[in-house]
Length: 384
Image (cartoon, rainbow, N blue to C red; front, side):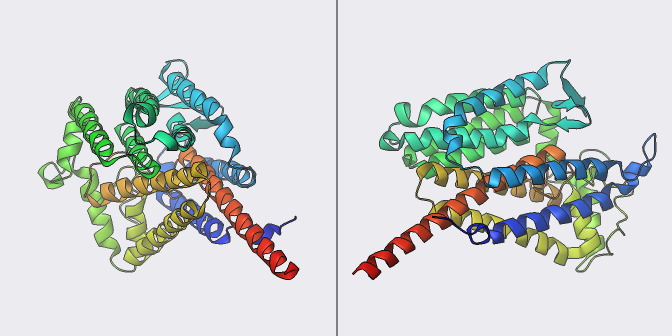
């Protein structure tokens, strides 16, 4: 039976996704314009040009992935996890990895700089969804059901910490915990995993002085206004300057070399300054719409693999949003996590759109299953 392309697509999810991605391009250009002018070779369009290139590639990938049956990822999961691990090894090699700001997290491929950990995020979700969907019969047994994939998670966590990238590593741990929870693991197993995860976080967070400063400075940034507290204080100033309705698009003062990383991790502060609290609420409202829609898609999916995959994607995006907002508002330590679909960063934009395309495909499958059921019921009624 043939289905209408228009009727099958989850247009609410798709339109909301591209509204945010389009808005992100506008804000990246606004926030990065002064930084581009200040380069050795001045080019106010340098950042937005790279972001636009990634956006075009991401749109093409979205259109392909949205029509690629999500069930095939189940068979591909061993290959995906091997590629993820290989990419994390590759980025640590001096002749492949690119170091920026003391962190070696990127691989340079021509004009594109790729951050493998962004691919690993979705790769781990696919892997965990596949494994735990197969272990439903004995998920209540820790050694046989819960533990085996956690060995891989721990190995990946260690590789990401070697970059180092505590924010991304922690987000993977949190999403893993959520997937174990939705798989139906026992509470005592969940509590045990929570204790182990928290211990790992504390050990690695305390292993370097700069991480300790980050974890403590956000509590009182004014104690070191020219050091570790500088970025948060400048973010406060941006948000206060914007007020309710903002200073106007492109009229930010803080992006003029006052607020570091204005076009990446702290772009929400520029949104607050230029578009005010109302602009921030609209952005977060659209994010919330995607998350709510994603939870509904996961809940409606009849396949355990599809359901876990949807929930994993939703919670990965949710964790990133919470970490980013927490850093910008000074409620959480600065982790370097970008705001999904808004912050500058090609790898983040690309793999976020790919993740949402997978979610859109799960939704298409849900819609088709509902229609098949309705058509079958109509046929039975007609026959009777």
